Image (cartoon, rainbow, N blue to C red; front, side, top):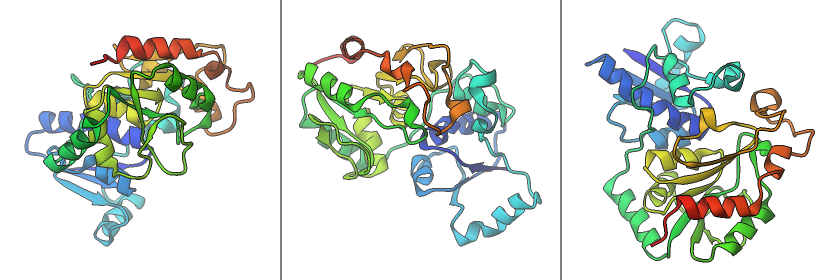
Length: 283
């Protein structure tokens, strides 16, 4: 039996999913129990056939197990790779780093999402009414140092009228002008379905870039405080300015950049529009 306790952001939760599949392949017949510390994590893993039992830490039925974890009475795998600063010691992808917690080497590090037919239908229905829909999310919940300037995103949107930019995310995030605004109007899983049936995803290093990989959709991702070696994907439109102080995510964490986010400032509007046109096909 394997017990996994998940922490971290939504992207980190998604990046752990390849290890679940590999674990079941390496240990046929084993039981995998995954404990989630948030409803969002739980929703990401719903209907995953590689997970035998999916539980919320907040559920009273999990209290005994949580106590066993706290007092080390049972063995738990806690793949919080951010604790030791991956950018300081690794150059391989985050999913492969997480697999080390399971004593595994991945042959396939693509994240897994398993949508229901109803969720798929909702995504298709929404996307069908838009011409060349592209999901956009300019926000990083982990560090503002990863964000580009919102006025530059709006300039990109204005420069590419052949695309319909669909903004996903939470209602407390900046609303970009010129988008179809779906922030907070559909569920997390319906948002992932929209990604699946869109032309692709553009944004900074955050959750929806990993959803794009899970759904086999192209993406254009802007990196600065983090780097594409760990959180990007080969073959996608990764834009990264390797200034001397980058990557700094494991040094500054959520502290503000003392240099005015030079790494993000150096990314030009034309560079992003060109990457979108090159990577996201038009009808």
